[in-house]
Image (cartoon, rainbow, N blue to C red):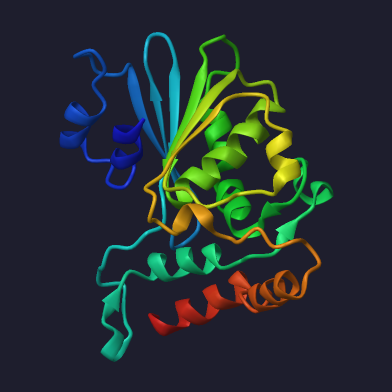
Length: 229
């Protein structure tokens, strides 16, 4: 699962030969899925083996590139900036907005929804192969939300493995899980402990929700696209 989580950062054919082998054998297929926006930020790998299928979600984009220049802050991929804006969309979405139990992180949910239908299309519509989901960092949070969303639509979700994943939902969301979730964390890493578990409606929680409301992604996208025209 860790190797699958790492491979989706590059989708490299050469790395695939080593990272995706299990028992010395290559998967039957390894398919890349990405969103259709001008600057894609949501990616997943569909990796099928004889006895099971792995769906791995990519974490936050952090590598540098030449998409645009921010002066003394350096040159970064525009996709990376947009991706991080999603991370800070801290508003908690309710069940009526997501069909998921409890409250879930808006940014992580939106990242999944960008490719949800493509993931569905890449999975067998019929068949009983168990599906395992995984992801690193943001990808782990997305994997947990995706697992519940897919399970509710009849897919045979078996278990989820996450690595350094932030929280994707509240306690009521957690209670709605009906499959094992294994969270691999490093003790001193702060990421698995965010967003903080403040009570909904508290002064701090309301403050974070208000701040995240300033990150209106469509408007930000338009502004950033104008920068590089």
